[in-house]
Image (cartoon, rainbow, N blue to C red; front, side, top):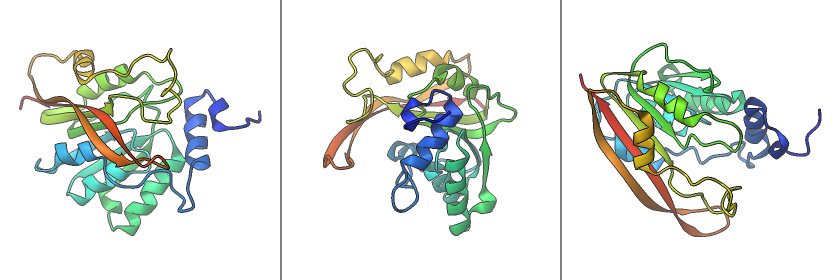
Length: 219
């Protein structure tokens, strides 16, 4: 069945495969390849160990973590995106520090524990059980380890939801924290809304808001 654009796709795997192909720039990638600012800020200073990234995309965060000494498992639904990350890892000499795994997070269940579990901007225009995924992520954190969640606190300018009055509001960091339904034995280390200025496509400098949650499991 032909589609005029990836916007017409509703199957998550098909949507993201098409998105990572149709939105590539002349350099062959969609994103900048740089680590997300909140991830760098929240992880810098932590002792490197094992890390799991949920929704790694083209690997900006995973590659930065590997460069900082972490042993990373990067999960994403898009083989196209993972291929970009794997190629960059080989180019940077980090291929042995990142395992790239095509995974549908909607049906994912943790099979191991990690010192750090990250989910940065795990949002989707098509169906994604985000709260369920993040609650499952709690059980992937090893004793003494951390879960870091970074999300949009407000819709970025020009996004499909930016002017949609019917779109549900994005969750605040308080709401993300509450939705995790953490058991006893967890410490909240970060729970905040953070503004940052970025050069946004052709709109010049804009202010984006990140909702940031970092929690630590007692050792």
